[in-house]
Image 1 (cartoon, helix red, strand yellow):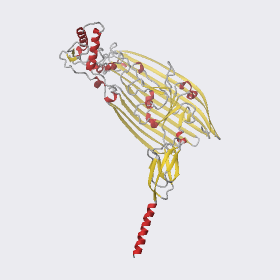
Image 2 (tube, rainbow, N blue to C red):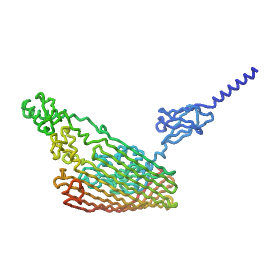
Image 3 (cartoon, one colour):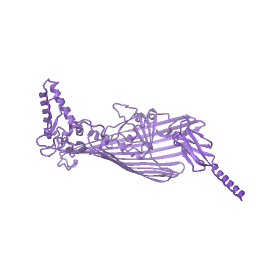
Image 4 (cartoon, one colour):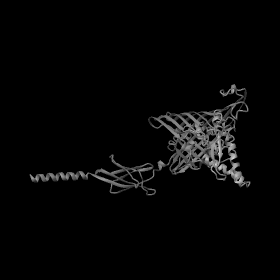
Length: 620
C-alpha cells in the first residue's frame, strides 16, 4: 500500500513538472538597422497565438507564458519591414526601413511621381497634418510644414487668408501669389472683389475650399513646375488633391469642432494703467518747461496741470498734485460733480467679446471595383474678437469616378460654396481706422457719452477721439462670395501604359460687396449718407488633353507625356452708388436721391502645348 502511494505521488510530481515545462518566457531587444537605436513601440507577437508585447523605451520586450511549442515571433513597426524571427534566449531583432512605404506618391504637374524619383523641388503635406488644426483656411495650416514657404497675415479680420510666398518675393510690381491647381485644374485664386478699395482686408477666394475635403497638398517650388505650367508657375505651384472613397462599405463621417477665444488669449502684454500714463504725460509737460525753457517747478507744475485739465475736464476729470516736482503722483479727481473721479471707461469690454469658432462637417464616401465616390457638406462660423468681425461658410463637394468597361473612366468633380465676411476697416492708419484709436494710452479717460447730458459724442473729434460705439451703428460692410466649380474628366486606357486624359472645367466666382455710411457718419456726412453695391463675376474655362506613356525595359524606366491646354479668363464688374439717402433705415441704391453707376469687363486667353520626358535607372 505504501509503495503504491509513493508511486502515485511521484507520478503527480512528474505531471506538475511537465506542466511547468510546457511554457516559457521570451525576451529580447528590437533595433533599427540604420543607426542601431532601440525601436520604441514595436509590436512583437508570438506567431499562431494572441500573446504579444510592445517594446519599451529601451527597445526591450518580455512575453510570458509562451507555449513551449511556439517557434517564431512576428515583429512589426510602422514604416519598417515586418520580420519573423526564431525564438531563442535573449533575442536581438533588427528592423529595416520599408522603402516602399517611405517612397510616397505625390501629385505633380499633369500627373503623379514618386517623391524619391522626382527631380524638382517639392514638398508634400497630407491630410493628417491638416485635420486637427482649427482654421477657416488651409493656407494657415501650411505654416511651418513646407520649407521655403512664407505666410503673411495682412489682416486680422475673421476669415482673412494669409498671403503665400514661395521662395520669397519674385516681383515688385506684378503678382506674387502662387498658381493653385485643384484636382489637375488651375482655378481662380487670390484677392477678389472690390473691398480692398474700401477696407484693407484680404478676400481670398481660396477661403471657399473646405480644408476637410483635402487629401494632400503638393508645393512645387522651382523650374520643374514652370517647365509645364509656364509663366503661371513663376511664383510656385500649389497642387491640391481632394478626397476620394476607399474600397469597402460606405463610410459616413461626422465631425464637429467648437472653440473659444477668451480675453486672456489675446493679452500679449500688460499695458500700463491710466494712472501711470497720466503721471508720464504730466512729467512730459513738466519737463518741457523746466528742461526746455528753464522755468521753475511751480510754473512747470501749473502748465502741466493746465494741459491735462484742458483736455479732460470735458470728460469729467480734475487733475491736481500735492507738490510741484516733475515726478509727482497726479490726483485724478472729479470735475463739475461728474461722478467720474477715479473711474475709467472699459473700452475693451465694449469692443471685444469671447469669440466662438465652430465648424461642422459631414461626408459620405465609398468605392467598389467600378465606382468611387466622395460627397461632403460643411458649415463654418468664425467670430472675431472684435464684435463687428465675422465669417461664415457653407461648402459642398461631389467627387465621382465611374469605370466604363476596361478602357474608359469618367470622373466628375464639382463643388459649390458660399462665404460671407464683415468687419472693421483694419488699415494701420489711425486717420482711416477709428478702431486704432482704442490703442491710445489714455483711452480709458475718453468716454463715449457726455457726462452732463448722457448723450453720445457724435462729432468726429467731439471727445478728441472717434466714438466707435456710436459710429458702429452708422456704417456697415459685407463681402459675399459664391463659387461654383465643375470639372469632367475622361480617361482612356488605350494600351498597357498608354493613357489619354481629357478635362473640361468651368470655374464661376460671383462676389457681392456692400458698404454703407449714414449721414451721421463722417464718411457719409458730406453727401447725406451713401451706399455702394459692387458686383464682380469671374469666369475661368480650362480644356486640357494629355497623353502619357510609361514603360519599363529591364532597369530602364521611361515616361513620356504630350498635351494641349486652352484657358479663357473673363471678369465683369459693375458698381452702383447712391447718395443723399432719404432715411437711415433704407440702405439701398434705388431709394437714394442721386445715383451713379459704372461697369466694365476684362480678361485674357491662353493656349499651351506641352511635353515632358522622364527617365530613371533601376527605379532610383
